[in-house]
Image 1 (tube, rainbow, N blue to C red):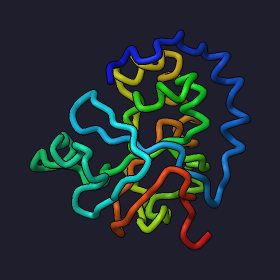
Image 2 (image 1 turned 45 degrees about the vertical axis):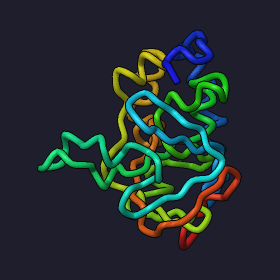
Image 3 (image 1 turned 180 degrees about the vertical axis):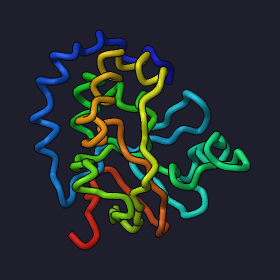
Length: 191
């Protein structure tokens, strides 16, 4: 899948600001998985209805383990960023169509309040038969994100409010292997 899928004009800062209230209405204790996306190689995307989350490999079939990371001492994969999740309301605002959602590069698209207040590091979500844990390492925007969704979008998610709401999404790691499906509710453990 290339970056031009469903090419659309990028939202303006004003249009993004107008969508804030809708994003803030995301459920706090649990919300549905709206999309599962594997990234078998750089810039490739596979939308799947069901996937396996594994404590060793992340989303089975995803290339996370093969990519490595500049933040690990060995350059190996970063376990704190094994699976990334993004808010479906924010992504819909940015992408303007579900067809463009996979461009974000996050494996799970969930309708849930991702703010640090609601999901502090160490919080866990039960999804299907799997459990993921929120990492303290922030998930930030990059040049690819700006190219796909616009510079206003990158500025929007990078503001203090955008960072507090974790609009770019959240890094997680798998703490219990299991099956996840589109439509499963991601539920805060202990909520």
